[in-house]
Image 1: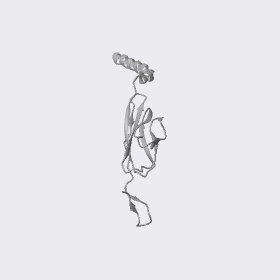
Image 2: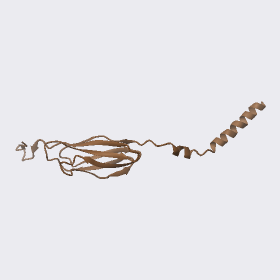
Image 3: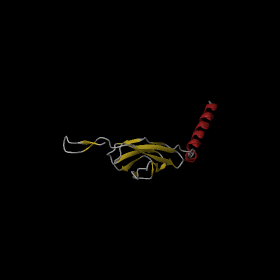
Image 4: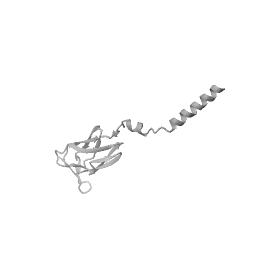
Length: 138
């Protein structure tokens, strides 16, 4: 009985000491895992905007790396942010028959890099006319 009383006293003391432990420093010492997710985007030739969805739990920066050989046709509404965001990609209509592409680079402060491809179809089809009098593009 005396041993059980000592054991109970020891356990209650140990629990009271453990409950006073400040573990916030221990949590801060654990490096966080940056998350960065996004997908490629395909835009119709006549569209003038698209949404780039970025899912992140950290700070990120964005740049258009390539694809401006047709001129400045793709402009993001933001070049940096924190966390999840929807970025408006303003485009001009693609007046060419061929598809055009651009590469967007998204980088976190921890060095995670994602490259996505934004492609815009060319305008292929008919020139609008009067009713049935539409003329094909050659």
